[in-house]
Length: 388
Ligand SMILES: [Zn+2]
Image 1 (cartoon, protein in one colour):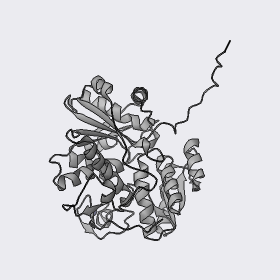
Image 2: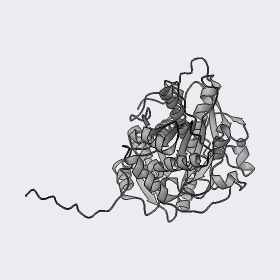
Image 3: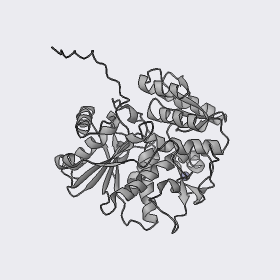
Image 4: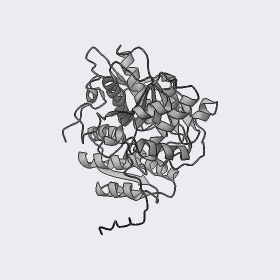
């Protein structure tokens, strides 16, 4: 792999909560000032968006610019005309992240993460993940020639486990999901692992070098939608990495004078977390709940999710698992077989449209974070069709 070079258009890092500027470095635990006052918040990059800013070359405007590593990014925008009519919005499309090399949006993050890790001489990258993030990091670490550790729980799904093992990453299981973070924290603080994901409770966002990659979703949408910009974007959300990245990307486009208004970016969650914070709860609380939407699990809220909603005027919507199962089927019958967690974007749209928060004139984009082939189903053998 050729030596990775930090984007020359990056001038500094900035706290998304207190706005303090910090030199470009690795802040695994977010803004030091905010952390010391008990309000963990992540940092983002400050770009000089000069006249040379060209969102049609999205790879050039990421923390580590350059060519895709394994073909990530530049995902298709797929029109869903029949579903638009059914839901009652002017237009509806899916930004289909399932076409990324390991089948999810996480590849955008992993591509940047391994370049940063290589640039600072890290030997081992690590993620606390029982799904898409772990598989993706394992693939990109293999590509970059780095060691990779994925910290999961004993019940990791067989399909995801198989992929991580095939990529040669080390799998470690802790007794609980929370203990995954404790192990990564210990190793990261000891300088042994370069962490891709959050390990704090309450959490910050994932590694800022990785999260930066999600800005490209906004740049690509800008290029793909031309005269008909989205008014509302729905993002399946746990701690808000994609939500924040997409909001920040549109913010960059406005800063560069390419658009005047931001689309609203909405968070779809499996049970109320962000929604409760918007109603007054402390974002540092825990919000217990369970769901079959495994990629959106967790009981915490990261500040970046709130910042994204505030920046764009978006809302949070909690969805019912049974409704999401129906929408997974509806999307599959429109040609898009998505992971259950990803299908929640359509369910969230239906709710917001019913509530009048998304209007019939809206041009809506669902961020379809991941394809469905990783899901396990158990079947009896098919009955044999007789040829007689
Ligand atoms: Zn701060």
